[in-house]
Image 1: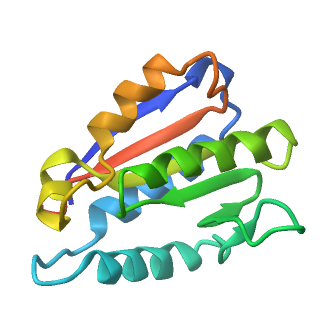
Image 2: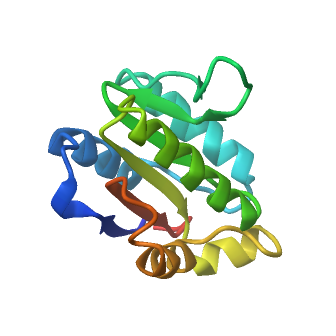
Length: 153
C-alpha cells in the first residue's frame, strides 16, 4: 500500500517515533484487494494494530458516547474512510482530549484523493485535510501525523 505523510505541528510533537514507524510499517504491509470495501480495509487494519496494543474505541468524555478510533499510550488514532464532514468532527475530538492532556498527539489515517473518489462521493481525503490544517494551524494545535493511503500497491 502506498502512503503519503504530513506532520501537523511537528515542532510540538512528543509522539514516540517508534509508534509512527509501526503505523507506517503496518500500512505498507497491508495487502489490499480492490474488491474489498472500506469496511473490510478498516477491520483488517484495526485488527493488525490491535496486536501492537492499540485499544478499541475510546470515549472522549464519560458523559457522552463520542469516541475516537483508538489510543496507544498517550497517542490517539483516527481512521476515517467516510464523509468529508467527519474529519472536522475527528479534529474537534482530538483537540479536546489533547487540551485535557489525555493524549500528547495523534495519528490520522485516511484515503488519498484518488482512492476516496473510488470509495464514493464526498469522502474524506488526505489532500484536503492537509490543506485545511494549514489554514487552521492556530486552532488545531495538537501534533498529528497524517497518513494518506492509496488503496493500491
